[in-house]
Amino acid sequence: MNVGSNGIPARELPLSARAPGKCIVFGEHAVVHGAPELVFAIDLSTQVFVKKSETNRLNADSEGTRRNDYFRSALELAWKDHSPVDVRAISRIPKAAGLGSSAAFVASLAAVLSSASGGIDRPRLAQQSFEIERAAQGVGSPGDTSTAVAGGFVAINGGSGELLWSIRAPERQWDVRRVSDPGWVWVVAYSGIPRSTAEAVRAVGARLGAPGGPELLEEFRRVAKHGIDALGRGDRSSVAELLKKNQELLREVGVSHPRLEALLEAAAPASEGAKLTGAGAGGSVVALPVPGKEAELVRRLARAGGLPFVVRPVPDGASLVEG
Image (cartoon, rainbow, N blue to C red):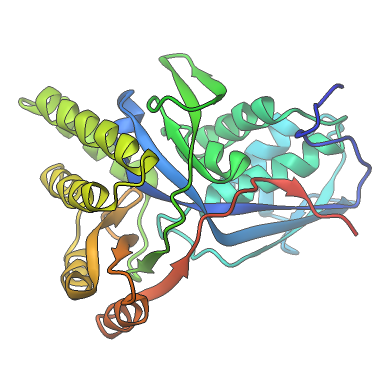
């Protein structure tokens, strides 16, 4: 297979691959319904190690295919050989925190299985990773998996940058474009409240289908579009204000949480703008620090009960780890 200079080449097992987590800046939930989304890959990652085995195992668990929907879906959709494999996954991304732990696992595992199946180009890896994650969750959009595959900043259904690929599902298509990195530092903080992406997506879908829902979706669309444009031109103050507006919309569709609100309140004196990131109803917040107050912001979030991380965008997506 011709995978191109930026694809995943053919290799034999044993293999290892790594993929980054993600942070959604604008547009979570609304992207499921075709609105724009802005996401960037963060310097927290998942690495998988895969070798042939006598039975399928995930982190030494021979029941992994039964217990882990993502593992089972990856074997069904990305593994042409179908022989048993032993997979060990090591992650720095908190689970169920809205920071892309499942997408990073799926993209790194799909990269290995596809490499051992003859190689794969990056657009196809993005499509495959989306299909694996959606098969496991039952709902969703390709923002998380495309970011794990692409790295850097990406816009879904928005922006004017280079078209990386289009992701297709029976009900719609999402275009994924590159957005330039303004070089800012961000802070994310996990609330300690795990959440279910599938449950939150279904709840928001019901709200957007109720009276007033189409108007809410249009406002999500407007905020994300302006946010993508503002970040692309490095307009920090506009991005900060749009973060606050996006949070107001997320409150209105019911996916905020008292712990998230406490973190946002604690962050306010040291951040220019902040919001929840990911599915919500728990999970994490993202804040754009006041320049020079990054350490203060981290302290404030930690004192408020969060698990904070200073994160920077990473330019590289899923890739094999040599050696």
